Image 1: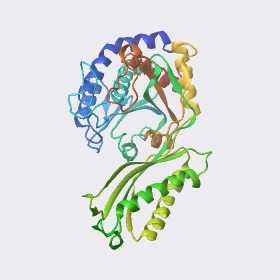
Image 2: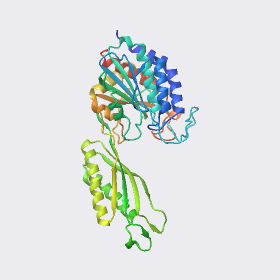
Image 3: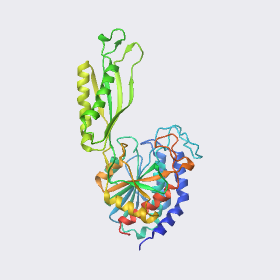
Image 4: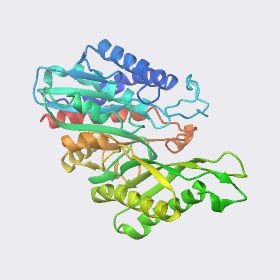
Length: 396
């Protein structure tokens, strides 16, 4: 029996007050990547309250909930669950109680939306011919992230997931609207650490030392030329050094400097090429200056590539629910997302959920200490995800 769009919206409206309570609890109690112990416990509690089965995982954090676990095939909804090391500077009555930790990227909205969708779909589970999986993933904000670990845990298997959906808040999109994009949408991320090893000495006799600070400055300048001179200008890429540490006193030549950086690209070939060029540049500069180096390439995220078939379901579902001209195009961004690992395994897409509302000052960028999201967005996200799942199962 087909569930009407009107019934979906009614069910989403019905669960919305509870979603607000969930979201505010999660916002008050944010936890950093791989430390989401209470968040995990709370999500499990909510799923049990809804009567949804929880499959045990070997991971210390993260949750897998299932509706109709005996049915095949499966559709999945993924939500990230971690927060950021940011001191919250909002006037919200449910401001973070964990000093220096904040949900400044909307993951609390993601979790509450996914939980609300779980509650709605569980109420109509007898009319769903397949399984619906709810993947609550840790450590999205901290590479190497939690997506690969959850995949290794088998969250996409038994039953096999045929399509996966995810959402991300967007403070540039007004509440009541969404945006989508086919293909490459978010960048590959490669984080790296470099230690320049010189020879310390007195500032008055630099010829008797190897100045690690001077070598580091040359390394930074030379690595920036990888983007401007060794990658195609038709393929966006960027390298940023976000941290430099070295030196102990103004009259002491530093023997060590540590650089931490990140490379971003929307092209997989560049993702593989840039680490090799970084190493080649380090070899050349350090050899020329008599220094040594250590290079650590951290595991990163691949390009996030949305599948057109999944976006078609999202666009059609939202249009049927809320009318035309409510779906925009997501711009490409050099931000990264480990949802990309799921999309390498199964078709799927991440849509942007509008949370902008100038009246309540919900217009600050992600990762801002003043970030606020319009809670009403959860109603729209829940209705959309509910219909998208039903649509994938042939309900429309």
